[in-house]
Image (cartoon, rainbow, N blue to C red; front, side, top):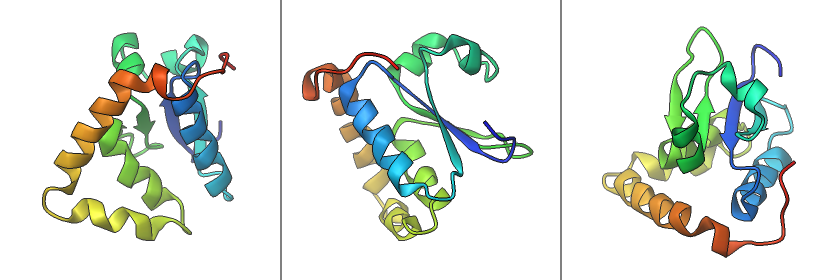
Length: 123
């Protein structure tokens, strides 16, 4: 990880989460986001985010000096803003009602994520 990179912490044992992380990896040609499964306890310990929170939702940690942390659906528009070719996809999140709806959808998916895509072991 580089000090100027944001870090996306996700569930490395969840197929759905891995598919989403792979999509971010493909879109991130400038390597602005480091992808770290929360199962990598050594790397995630430096962020001080409790394990139950990491198990419940993805977390995007912005690099210093900002250092803000976004979880779940709140991370999605921030991830898109970090990707120059995908920045335009973040604009709908600014519309009234979209982020609350995205949070509900994210929660629904998060509760069922182990059923949505199967066949992955942790990496």
